[in-house]
Length: 468
Image 1: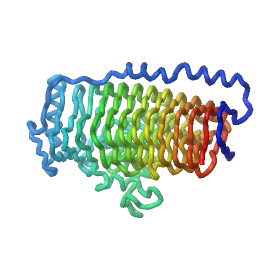
Image 2: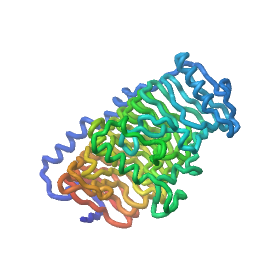
Image 3: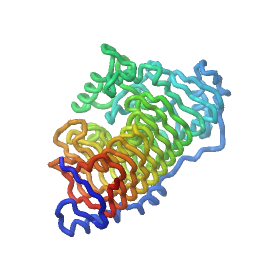
Image 4: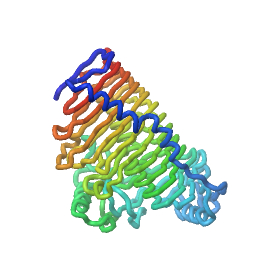
């Protein structure tokens, strides 16, 4: 790999010799989309609105003592709320145990008052019967997510309370198997894990088996997401704290007009991504805190054959005012992105932890394919990351195939970091180089090593430095 070290770049710098016409192309790409697109996207996001009616779970037999199963009370309150035309289903202060998933209906806002906690069962059998969901970007019939909505509209999870998946006290995390170089989940040699099921699911998808015939659930070991609106519209998740998720935490799939605001995610299990919009359109993620065991925010669009079958990109997504602590990446695109990702805007975020590996991360390979285009990043304050401030890796996981991913139009502006291994780690493919990467007004302090850049076409720096 080639390494590049710069000290100060006060004007646009060509890393290799390109014609001046390439600069004009970069300027053209800024017009549509550009940062001016953000207001248009916001205008298209139509947040849910609910009648001023409350349905307290205590009125339906719920007891917040932490030991009484309140699932039936939540189900009854949700049904009555939906029947009445909508409103809030309210969990007052207390600890509300539910032995099974909460399924939302249209026009229902699940609201947690201050000092309330909804604690979910740790028994996977409580999440049957199976529902249509996704596991790592592939559709299947599996255990229900803990909070699930299928083809619903005008739904929300709000409040000042806590959603506790209790996954650290259960077998959920164990199903990952050998993780992180140590048996960190309590898994021991000979215990069941997800490895065979993951391979089976991928083969079913590759063979074209319809999703509703890919039946897992009982006697299988594929974990569920925590909150998953599936094929839903006008979704709001606001204010709550979410801890101890079985797997991905907030995972809207094939949904539109999604707002995630003021949420705190503190979940350090395997694959505990904080927020994973998959094949979603018009999404706003703002003023959230992520402290996770995997990527903080990871934007996705389906895996391999299944992602190409649905061919639904994630697009028009805004991330702003968020704080990222532990995680594999702050804002991430990929790796399950076979349906494509485009028009992503990230601004005014803080990222800082010795356990945060990267700030901005794009990952794919030639087995997954797809495209990642039009990423705009500005005003990012990075304290410390353990690897790169900006990482693009198109040789992710060592997988290869015949679907070379396209990555182009990456604009990074006003990013300052205090400590990292590399400023940039950009590794494309010889068959499909990364194309058009533009950095402006960036300062990467105390980087231990120079950047690594391989197979990148049309890269430009303006006022970029690596001070010591």
